[in-house]
Length: 214
Image 1 (cartoon, rainbow, N blue to C red):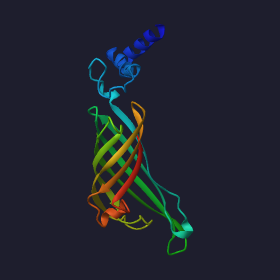
Image 2 (tube, rainbow, N blue to C red):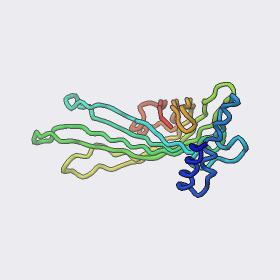
Image 3 (cartoon, one colour):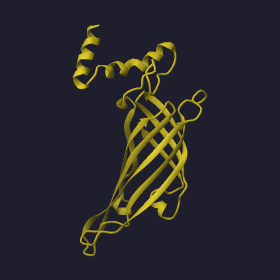
Image 4 (cartoon, one colour):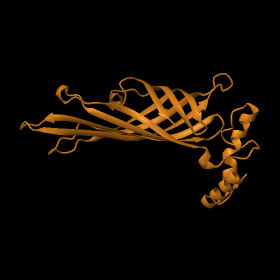
């Protein structure tokens, strides 16, 4: 009992009401009944606060260790994500994609230089749980990604290369294995509906395989 009082006092100092702390644990009460916690409301039907519907995460979108002797660049990409539980079966989200590449080469004087390139963009997505009673965590997944791509490497002493945009509408499925109410591993298999020659700068295939944590 003393622990509960301390928790309520601390929460009251951090928020304008005490109800936030009460709602935090309320959905977990369903586990005592052998059911999963509700994702958008408490057991008595009250909507969960915004922060309890948000999930923050992401993943590594690309990783390649370069080999200067073979002309293979070093590449790393990150994809932070914010997802919102809009309804019990519907998740909406946005993400940011950034990728950096560096290639070591020799200039005309024989000196080693670093050639660099980067691409960045954003995407919005929606996930709808298909058959939760049969296969929990299986979602239909749709998203649109727009990425600004550098047209070649930046070479020291030369003008910066231009850029072009690639838009990719993706459809497919995502399987989400929940670790907690606000965390999980999400494995997606998507198909690029706009797979053109420029799209190859983003994906080598119209099929996109992705693992993200949120």
